[in-house]
Amino acid sequence: MSKLVYFVLFVLTTSTLHAEDWKPLFNGRDLTGWRANLDPGAFTVVDGVLRINASSQTRAHLFYVGDRQEGFELFKNFELEATVRADPNSNGGIFVHTDMTTRDDRKHLARGYEVQLNSSAQEKRKTGSLYAIVDLEESPVDETEWFTVRVVVQGKRITISLNNEEAVDYIEPTGVERPKERTGRLFSSEGGAIALQAHDAGSVWYFRDIRVKQLP
Image (cartoon, rainbow, N blue to C red; front, top):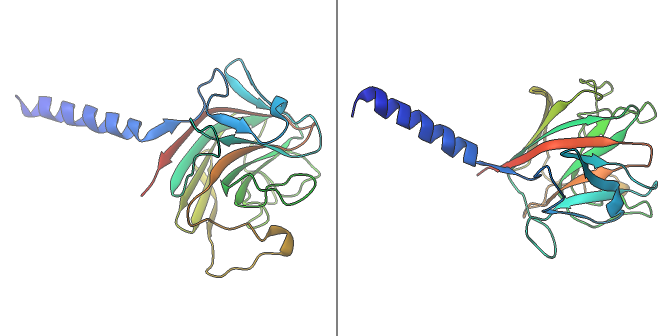
């Protein structure tokens, strides 16, 4: 066998293995693998796209559960990618290292970190913020156009990139103390859930091509 053939086989094998590292979380047809903690009607699939629009001011979240009948799939060290866009004046978010525990009557999630998605004027923390930890005053993207969100979590470090441009690089300090209302805004030693937020009735977000890669 020639060196050229060996090289081609090596490239094809390497490319296949690299592609298999990624796990799609959304099949583009239905919500298989996902479960809402509240307001299940807030999450629908329309023309191959996941549409998120709450029916009230109470927060609802869609958790990736895989094939579990109870609980959710845990992600500790990982890379998450999603292609997203929004209607004008929309608020939303992606949670990592979270669970279904809520902290108030409006059902905000009590644990984990939120990657902010926000094109609304009234909310000052803009898209790409690590909510209430590293906040951006201006959005790096036009949320009415499709853009890519990449979140990488490894150990106590999280990075957020929008359209391949890094927006946040944060390392959780040892022994950090949060304000009383955000005491759970920490990484979990066991990992946690990935969840998508339905923020309010006036906000509409769209997701497609959601995928994850586990990291060592």
